[in-house]
Length: 198
View 1 (tube, one colour):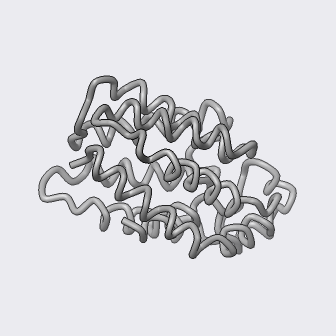
View 2 (tube, rainbow, N blue to C red):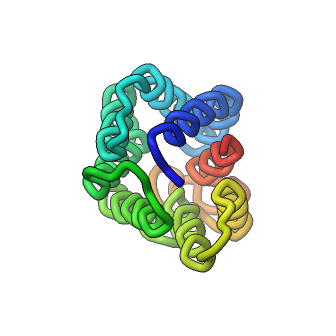
């Protein structure tokens, strides 16, 4: 399901996808923020791939390396949330060489709790947290014959569609009020685009 080689393949694909979507991510973020989301994601993923030879069978070590990569290469709030999410996921995987379905559910739940705590946000604010909520609910609803790539693509699309016409209620975007109703949250957009890499 999820092991060292799968992680290597996933992060390689994510890097390629982040290069394709670099300008789109920056443009989306520039409408409501600093315009550096593409930079943040690309730099973090490049650093992970630069250290991919350090990956071991212990998934905990691999996720900690991912956390350190984002800490090293990103000072943005988004990058910090990703780094802490990877770090907390790492703590739950000590000694594990593979992840089963329940482990993946726990990983998403851990990321959500981290983002809520560190980002001072909640489900419904129109952020990446809402996309993770859709993913988590779909993971819990399906038990057998799960096509994970399709589930991630479907969930990220569902989340974006569900928040069309709604305001972003957190971060700098709040200053733009009703204008954000017509915009995708950059983090939600990024997760949707990145899911195409799976």
